[in-house]
Image (cartoon, rainbow, N blue to C red; front, side, top):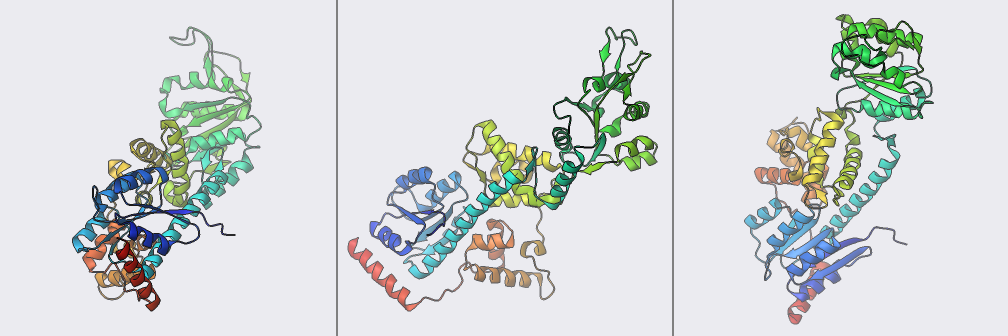
Length: 482
C-alpha cells in the first residue's frame, strides 16, 4: 500500500490537447493532476485547491503566464511554478525567476526530462510536508510548561527544572533579556509542591528605592508619610506560594540585607512594626547582570549572592539554540493566528532562511515580536519576507564561504564559487530552488550568483531514444486534435 502523501499539480494551457498530453505523461501514484484551459478559472481553482506545483503556458488569452505567476506567488509563495514558452528568451526567463518561478521551459517539451523535473519537485513537496508534520509532532513534545525548545541547551535546562522544582527554597535564574526567565520561574512554581499557592512577581528595576521595604515586607499605619493604613507586603501576600524577584541586581544594598534575613529566618518585619511574622515562601530571583562582577564592585551582597545561587539555572541565548527556531516560529504563528483570527499556517522557505540569518540580539522576545508583526501583515496563509519588519527585509552582508560552504583554498574565489555551484546544480538536476536549499541561500541570491558567474541554469540532460519517440508521438496527436 502506498502511504505517500497526495500532491496536487495544476497544468494550465489554452490548448486542451497539450493538457491531455501533460496529464498522461505526468500521471503517477500519489499525484493528483488538475487541468484548466482558462487562466482566470485556473486562478480560482488554485485558490480553492492550493496545488503545490503549477505548470503553465506563457501566452494565453485573457491573462499571460507571467501574470498568473504573479497572482499565485501573492497567494502562496511556497508554490513551485514552472512556465512553458514556445518563444524562449533569456530576458523573460530571468524575469520569471525573479518573480518566483521554479523553472522556465522551452516548447516543445521533452517528456522524459520533464517527468524527471516534476518528479524531483514532487519529492521536494513530500519532504516539506513530512518536515512540517514532524515539526508539529516535535513541537508538541518539545514544550514544557509553555517553554518551547528541543536543542541540547534547552533539554539540559528542562532537566534541571524538573530536578530542582520539588526541592528548592531559593533559586537564581540568569540570562540575557528576552530569554524567558519569567517562563522558567512560572514553570518552577507550577512544578513545585506550592503550585496551588500564589505566584507573586516584583520587578526590582521598576520600584523606587524608598518604597522597596514597604513593597516587600509591608508597613504599619503612620510609619512614614502617606502610610494611612496597615499594609501587608508581597512576602506575606505570597505566603504558601512563590515570590519572583525579577532583575534582582537592581535591588538596593540595604534591602538586600533584609532580604537575606528573610531567606535565613523565614520571618518578615513590617516597616514601623516591632514584631516579626512567619512566612513560608519560595523565592526565585532573576537577573541579566553578572552578579559575580557586581559582588566584586560592592554593588551586590556576596552572602546574598551565594544564598541565591546555591541552585542556579541559566537561560540560553537564542543564538545558542538556533535549531529551536522552527519550533518557536510555529508556536508563535499558531498563537498569533488565533489572536488575529487569520489562517496563517507557516513561513515560506525564503522567510525561514532570512530569520535563520539574523543574530537575534533580543532573543526569544524579539522573535515573538517579529512573528507577531509578520502574522499581522500577512495577506495570505503564508508569511513571506515582505511581511517581516523593515530591518529584516534586507539580507545580511554575504560572505563567499557562507554562500557555498567551501573555503577559497585554490584558484580565485569566483572560480571556487563557480565550480561548487555548478556541481550542486548538476547533483540537483538543474532545479534552482533545490540547489538553493542545499546551499542554504535564498533562490534569488543563487540566481544572482549564477548570472554573475555565467553558470547555466539547465544542465545537459541526455534524451533517451524511447523518450524522443514518445514525445514525437504525443505532439503529433496534440497537433491532430488541435
